[in-house]
Length: 95
Image (tube, rainbow, N blue to C red):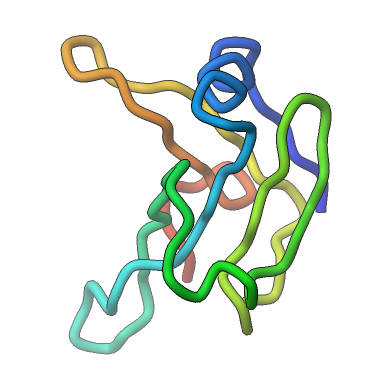
């Protein structure tokens, strides 16, 4: 998996300890076909089970049991409330 992160996102993650955890949301549709990506710099209770991917400036952990995408993009988004966001092969959700 290639990790493409903006300079601002890398700086933000380093300031928070250098770890980024990415997991899938619960089912968002009746058919269960779409799930959003949720990101956090705080380790979840099952953090030891996450898949580890190292990149320049931080370590990304992906929820266990998830097949990694070709590319994971990490950006800082929002005008008023700034926050980290991850994009799966360029999309904000997983099909």
